[in-house]
Length: 252
Ligand code: PGA
Image 1 (cartoon, rainbow, N blue to C red):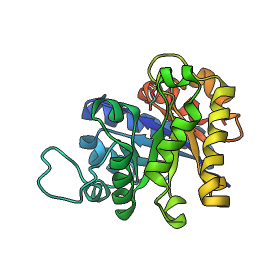
Image 2 (cartoon, helix red, strand yellow; image 1 turned 60 degrees about the vertical axis):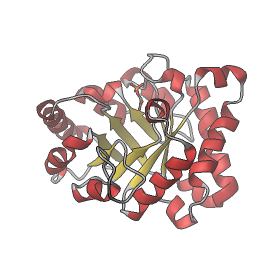
Image 3 (cartoon, rainbow, N blue to C red; image 1 turned 90 degrees about the vertical axis):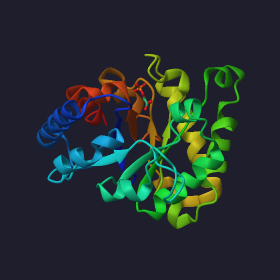
């Protein structure tokens, strides 16, 4: 059975106090209302991980994620944060290759392959993001583009390591724009991603959770999650309000 996952990506939002309040609200609503088969994840700014992690200790249904890690193990990389540091404060997941990091911080597929490796070596589960910009979709080459991202960053992995990966498909034109991919567009791309993963890893790809991200909200999550290859969501804006976020997690 593929894991159903709803992961919040707070991005660069929330002070520590705001983040702790939001976490407590999510924990309470999840405990009261969510069935056991959905994994909820909070992707907080790195500086909040330790405090949020402490709040999550007694909340087994909610896990902790970072939003990035260095591709280096340790050393003279001022301002960077290593995978080992993330594990040491209780992070279980790390979002890698988000389109904002690819665009604003020039992260390449090759660099992301290294980040995936070091995350896995340190026991973190990568939530690996892929997705195309509007001009690529308009040119009709989105499947090739996304498959190449997967090939170049993931296909060096052994089957054993590949099985630990979560994928998030995020059409860049739908992130933070209020524009959502239609449920059919999401399912079509998720099926293409799974077929590509299957071409390399065979049956193991049937077990890979593929999340949709891009203006997912309580009003559209149900329709999007109905796609047979859509196993949940990576949620930006709507993860900043506890009620909206958990409503999305209840939308399977
Ligand atoms: P959004 O962001 O839900 O605000 O569109 C999704 C993401 O970037 O992870």
